[in-house]
Length: 96
Image (cartoon, rainbow, N blue to C red; front, side, top):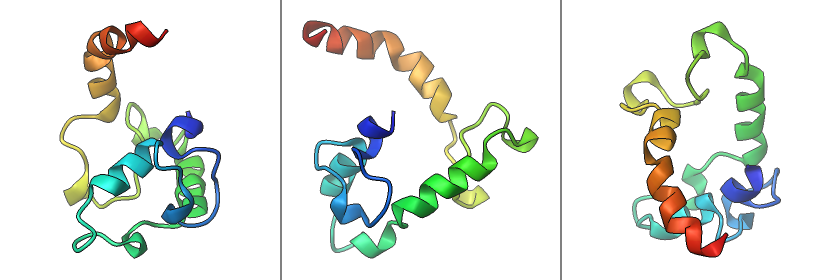
């Protein structure tokens, strides 16, 4: 899963992430006048925070995120994944 999200990179800055990973694509689509590489946290910090919160009762059914309450997704990411699964499977069927 990490390979898809950020390539085979677990430490360093966002500039080391492959352009064809999810984070790499996101980075390329953001306006660099608004979001700079400094706005992205170090990868090791992201992985450490995620690992530290796995299994916490307060996070049950959610993806542990490091953003404040006012920036939490209004639709849980796992729900979006479930609801879009059929369409994603349809799109990716030719490359199986």
